[in-house]
Every structure is written in structure tokens, then in C-alpha cells.
Image (tube, rainbow over all chains, first blue to last red; front, side, top):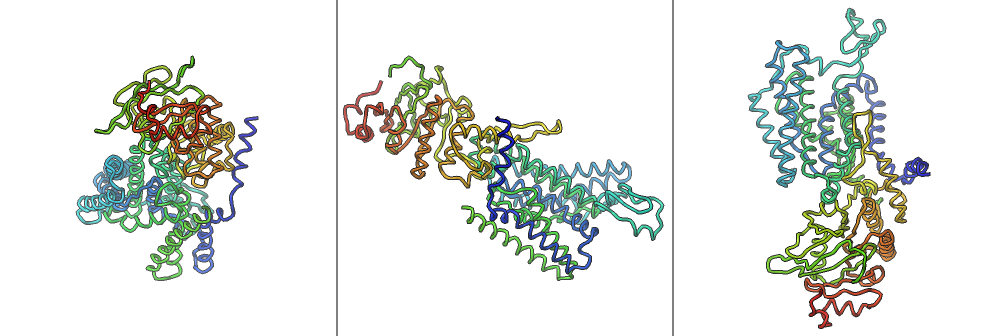
Length: 361
Length: 259
């Protein structure tokens, strides 16, 4: 009898949702769908595999930064330093990979670049988390300070100039595709099919740009961590009621440190991806991306007071931003309108959220 | 009290001072299994300090505490909780953004292996276990997946109690559980206190509300200015007697040192 009860339970629980609540949860999806329809009708070449993959590849770096920010914001904090930590990571990765040069096999150079950028992220993340959790300094202040420190160190390491990566073949990691398809040769992985003539190359369909693939993998991992593990559950608990989490025996301080380390690690990985994609490292590479990544999290339904938010929400938020940017470019609209449009969406999100809260109370 | 049963908790002349102020002054009390004891007193009488001594928030300056027959000293609230003393505070200590089962298992989430590698929170287990303990206590929460934020004050109170019961509380301390609740909800919470009693879990109930205490408590302990002003069996007393102890009108009883 107990087993039966257990089986019936989830189905019973799911149904008791009001339609308003559903709209509140689904509006971001609907908005994204609306954008896709509008741009598909009005924008020449918007609705195509090539363009969709472009959107995916272009949003990857911001999205990876937004993944870490999602954890931080759900835990009730904010990390303003991820933009310049990402920039610092591009510089460190570029310096390491350039200095290793041609003496090392490509794969080793790439892996060491990734390791270097991870360290460049984890160190500031650990410092952020420790000061916030142990010394009880507000995250806004600590990460604002770390923003300046990472920015300065990034420029000092790079001598104020972008560091270009000379190692051959690294650009392929940031700009290649997972699959190539040609009607004559079939599928091939990682590299263009061999022995195609110039005019045949145009018939090749490229599928899954590497940045998009990397982003998808990281999104899946982060989604699993946040929604299925104790780490994720504790992140929600700490953001919901720190005192209650503490009384329930959750190690709040060390958890907070881990959250900031995770955010900075992901910023570091976003940085090395940038280095692969643009074959250079620049201290200010992430400057403009920080606000986009926070916007993605907020549009995705996370509360800046903590306790609310999902990875799927953040993904939708990042998609909305990326689609607006891409669609407006295709329509030939002055690019400065992008900022206006995204700003409007952020404010709209918060308004909808408040209305939802009123209805549910 | 003369009982052949062993008290689950016994305090012997426990004191706590903050600088010059003696917040708890040589208080002795016993709580037996299956008993509801009311703790009454005016503001500043030392009720809160006394329960904080029991729940490990404060450490006493003098006297002894015996828990389940052994002399005990709780170094922290966590220490006390691990040994079965659950305190339900006024502010409830629930995560309002999480649902009832997540709160019941807060910090002690069960995990199961997936793909032989990764530990994943076992939500089905949490839900069925939560449902079971809520059913046992006759608590109705229609949708277990709703966050606590969307629940009434009484339901929140019930979740806190269910959490304590699920983790096998040996002694429950409830600090003003009916404050800030509507009348029907107050009744429900008092009913839960009765249910706990039937299950053999003793409850130490702190309240301002005399009728609450008279409704559920077997005994009342009245505090005044840090001292135990008196101890009365609820069936053999009335509100007047309790109030006079609280305000110290009855000189003979207030002056006589207890025990």
C-alpha cells in the first residue's frame, strides 16, 4: 500500500497549479517564442540553421558567466567581478599558451591554457568567498573591489595591450564545428572532409560550433548540480534563509565560498573560450559581458534577494538577449537600440515578477 | 513531584548571569516523558534565558542539568539537537522559498547514487517520508511542492513540528507557538501539542497566553525575576493563582525558596 501511495503522489501534486501561475512561469518562454516569430518574418536569413548556430556560438561566453552568476544570486549574493576575472583569465591563458608555443603538442597547450584560466578564476573566487563568508563583508563591496584588482592585474600582466596567441591551430578550437556534413563524403568529426574542391566546400553543412557544444555541456552540468544535488539544495537554502540553513546544520560559510569559487571558475572557463575564439587575451574582454550575464539571470526569474532562480531560466534569459541582439543586427537597426531593448526587457521582467507575487499572496 | 518514572530532563539549581544581572537564579525543574509543561512568566522573568540554557544557546554558570538520567552539558544548539532536544522558535527557522519536504530534510537531505557515480538528492523518498509524518500528525498540506511562503502560519508551525518529530525529538521546546496565529490555527497547533504528548514526546511550552497553557499543559512552572515562583498542577489550579504568582502578589509563595 505504501508503494502505491508513493506512485500516485507526484501526479497528484502536479495538478494543483493555477493558470496565472503557469503564465507567470512561462512568460519568458512565450516572449522568446514571440521574438523568434517576429524576427523570422521580418529578418532576412534570421530563420536558418547557420544563423541559429551563430546565435548559440555568440552567446556561449556570456551564458557560461551567467551560469556561475545564477548560483551566486540564488545564494543571496552578487558577483560583480566575473567580467574582469574573465578578462584576467583570457590574459593568463593567452600568455601561457603563447609561451609554450610550438614546442608542445596542440592538445597539451590547449589543456594547459584551460588549467591556467581555471586557476586565474579560482584564486579571486576563493578570496571573494572567504571575505564575504568569514569576514561578513557585503558581496557587492567585496566583488566590486575584486573587479578593480582583477582589472589592474589583467592589464599589468598583459602590459596594457591585448596578448595575441601565435600557436597555430588553437583558433580551430574556438571556431570549429563538431560535425561537418557533405552529400558526397557524409559526416566527418572535428575537421572538414578531406579532398573537397573549392565549390564543393560551399555545400558543406557545419553542425554544432564548439562554443555552443561547450556551453550546452556546461549548462547540463550546472542544471544537474543546482536542481539535483545537495550542493544545489543548500544554495537555495542559504539564499532563502541563512539563519535557518545554519540552524539546520548546513555549513553556510564554506558553502558560500564554494559558490563564489564556482562562479569565478566558470568566468575563467568563459575566458579561455574567448582566447580560443579570438586567439588573443584582453584584460577588458569581459567588461561589457558582466551586465549581460546578470541581466540573463534576472530575466530568467532569479530573485536578487536570493532563494529563487533556475539554470533553465537563465538560459532563456540569455537566449532572449542573444536573439534581440542578433535580430536587430539582421534588421539593420542601429546597434545602440540593443541596449535600450534589453534594458526594457529587464524592467519588464521585474514588473511581471512583482505582479505575480501580488497575485499569489 | 513523586513519580517512579525517570525524568527526561532535570535541572538542579541552574543559574545564568549576564554581568550583574542574574537572568536565571537557581531554577530547578523536571520534565517527564509524555508530559506537557507550561512555562509562564512576565516579560523579563527569565523564560527565554531558561530555554536557551536547555537548548544549548547559553551555557549555565551554576547548577546541574541531567538529560535522560545523565549529567549533560550542551555546548551548542547543534549539540542539543543531535541529542534530541528540538526547539521551535517564534521565527520558525524555515526556508520560505523551499517546500515542506525540503524543509523537513533541510541539511539532512537523503542522497542516492545515479549512474554509479553521482550523488543525487532523493526527492521521492523525501516526499513520501514527509507525507507519512504529516499524516501521522494529522496535518493537512494539500500541495507538498508549494513553497512555505505560500502557507498559512499554522501550516508553517506544523511543518516545523513535523520536522522535529521526523528526526525523533525526545524533548520539544516551543517558544510562543500560537503567537501571530488566527484562532482556528491556534487550536490546530494546540492539538498538535496533544498529539506529541500522546506519542510520548514531552513538550516544554512557553506562552503568554494563559488559556493555551491551561488547555494543554499538565503542569505550569511560573517564573518571576529569574526565579521559579512556583509550580502548579493545571488540574488543581486556576488562572488567578497563576497570575498572582507571576506578579508576586502572593508573598509567602514567592519568598519561599523552592526545593
